[in-house]
Image 1 (cartoon, rainbow, N blue to C red):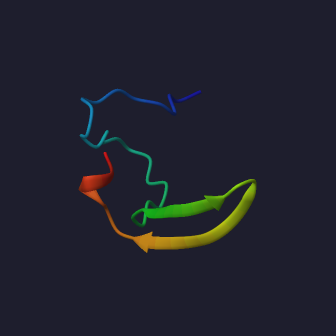
Image 2: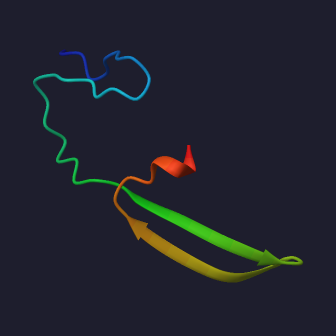
Length: 51
């Protein structure tokens, strides 16, 4: 059985023979008001300021 996981430095892509169809990143930002969800925003692409 081939290996399905690999290792890479933090922030670096792990290259291999498997193409899992990675198409980018979608981040979700939400706001709570008390115990209720007030709003949700979806941001496409990589947001380096979120790290």
